[in-house]
Image (cartoon, rainbow, N blue to C red; front, side, top):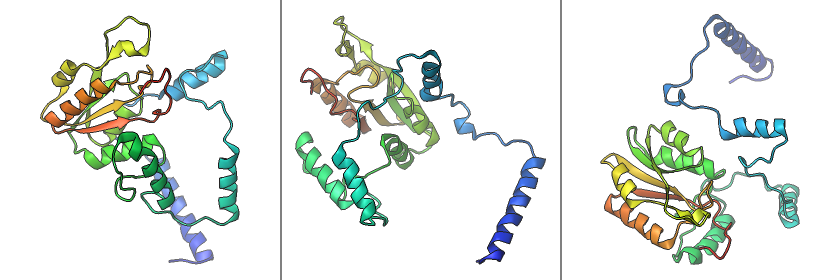
Length: 243
């Protein structure tokens, strides 16, 4: 441990040594597991939309203001010095509120302290989930088209994504023309498959997976002893009384 001038001197000495070593060596490549990663949709589409003054459908921009009561809660928290570490799995008030909301919604009694985990967004949740459940070589069935973070989340954990496309089975001109094929799921599964990842409502088609399809997914998961992950980040964005 250092204090005062000793700490500053030690820190400067480390920076000088590190800078000298870095300048004398060739740039180090990225890890092999991420070598195949390309640009994200945001780094490509958003600059193009700005350049050409185009409507950008590649990113979900909020076009409404934050509700006043939410802003006031944040202000009150700052003024009342609410500045300590929270419970790592989520603040008790928050997890209790979510259990009360989602319990009736899914028809189950949810234990807020053991069955809810708060993360820094859905992408962070997906990353943590893959890191926690996948052993290198495990396979994950990903329904495509898919949110572009899914494949990197699997790859970063050493998993292997196996893609199953939605099938067009109707001609109504709506997202409900697209269905998930049990036949293609069965063709994709193997003894290394551990997770089935679905998205409902689906991004980018907007399809709401029907109850019959969900029951088929559940039966498929039970048959092959899979972990079924359902990304439902847009579960309240429904039209025409869809469920």
